[in-house]
Length: 249
Ligand code: 13P
Image 1 (cartoon, rainbow, N blue to C red):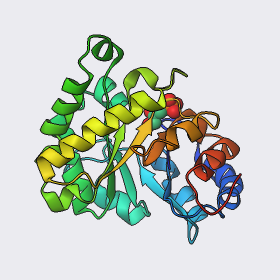
Image 2: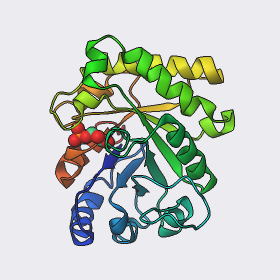
Image 3: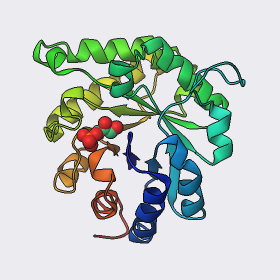
Image 4: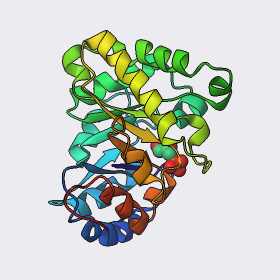
């Protein structure tokens, strides 16, 4: 269960959130809980989440491992030393607004793994692509030009997030069946390329406390990547409990 805070919250707001959120999810077991705040919040988040069941991640990283002349960028080893364990790669907002390509997604994933970070690699189609029946074609392209170039031992370490762009921040969640169909297709790509569909696939796009149960009831959906609803400690805690076998909320 991963929260992507996007460009929200200051270090002080991060501390306030975690003061409430960490005790609220202390009873969640059998699932990873990850919060991905903006870079400047990482020290506050890592400090607050130390020795808890909440892990911290970045929202992006540069594909070069070594220090260098890349103004405004952050490397994997910086994230790792700051205490991040995870990193989101290829989010649709980065693809749309910052010219992220499938090739860059691949390069960033390799850099993340080299730094010892666990990548959450995002794929997903735009509204016009879904409406024109191109969803599978887009997912296949994103998979083949990005993820499929990984070595099998690299692929074994990633998590994939299926985020249909039309469902992000719109309140228009994909139905559990639509999400499961896309997950099945992506898993099929993994079987075709790597001979194994044993990969965690998260769904993202307007996940809320009131739709989480229906989504998690789908066998194909292994978890969720949450934007807006991860900004409130109570709502994200409710979402985290939806996949926990040890407690109810
Ligand atoms: P929302 O949950 O706000 O739709 O955002 C989803 C998302 O983009 C998570 O990465």
